Length: 436
Image (cartoon, rainbow, N blue to C red; front, side, top):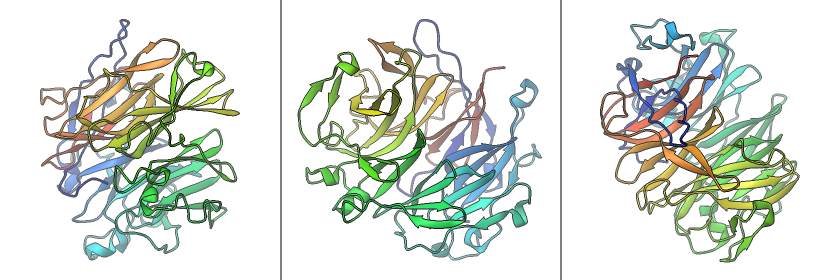
C-alpha cells in the first residue's frame, strides 16, 4: 500500500485508436468532476465496476469513512459530455452502506477507510474493505436495505486487511494479507482455500505473504503475491510468487536460479527463471490481466503480470499456457528497453484490456502518472508498449501533480476509465472517449 500522505483523484478516460504506423496516440483528458462529490476528503479509487446501467466507484476516505458512489452510464454522444458533479448530474448517487462501519461519527479505528475491490457477484455489487469486511449490494432492494455484510469477523492485520477479491464461477474468493489467507464464499457459506502442502500458507516467511492479487483464469483462481521488504534474503520464500488454484494449489513461480532457456514454444523467445522475476528488488506483483493479441497463437493463453520495484525498474512479465492452459510453459519478460522510464518507473500498478490492446497504468518514483498501451508487436508475438498519456498539466492532459494511475476500467466499447492518485488535491474525474 502507498503512504498516507499521498492524495488521490480519479480520472475517467476513453480510448483513442492506435495509429496505423504502430505508434500510440496520446489520450486527452477532460475534467468532468471538480467538487469531489461533496467531500474534499475523497482522495481516490483503486476499483470500479459496471452493473447494468451504472458505474460503481469505491473511494478511499480516511477522514469520514470509505465511500461508494455510482453514476448512470451511457456512451451515447449526447450523454458523454455531461458532467457528473454532485449538483449538476442527478444520476450521481452516494450508495455507501448506511452502517456505522462507514460512518464519520464512528472512531477512526472502527470504521472502514478504503474500498479495496468491487466485484459483481450474482447480480450484486460486493465491496471488500481495509478492515476485512465484505458487503454486498442488491440494487433492486435500494440503498437503505440493499446492503448486507456477508463476511464474519475475521482476524486481520490493520496494515493490510483484504488485499483483493475475485469471482470464479459461483464462488467469491477473498485474499486477506499479512499473512495471506484465502477465503471462499459459496452458497452463503465461507470456507478456507489455503495451501496446506507448504505447512504455513504460501511460504515460510512472513514477507512472502504480505499481500495478494486475485483473478479468474479459465475457470480457476490465479493468485500473485507480494512481500513487505523488497530485496529479501535471496530465497524463494521472499520473492513474489504466482499460484494457480484448481481444487489444489500449484506454485507457478520461476525457479530461483540464474539459468535461462530458449524454448521452441516461444519461437526463440527467452524465458527467465531468475530470482524475483529477474530482479531481486521486485517486491510484489501488483497487477495482472489475461490478454491475447491478434498475432498470438489462437490456442495459447497469456497472463501479464506487473511488478512493484522500489529501485525504479518495474517490469511486465507474462505466463504462457500452451493449448489454452493445458500445459504451462513458463514466464517471459516482455518489458522492452524502450518501455517505462529507466530507473524511474516503480509501479506497474493496474492493467486493462480494451479494443484488443493491453493498457498499463504506472507511477514514477519522483512523481508522474503514465498510461502505456501495446502499440505494436515485435517478432512473433512479443508486444511493444508505448506511452499514450503525458502528465504535463496542459489542457486535456493529466495534472502535473499526478503520481499514480491506480485503476483502469473498460466500461464499454468506446470508453476506458482511469483512476489516478494526485498530490495535494481531492477527488477529480477526467474523461476522454471515441464516439460510437
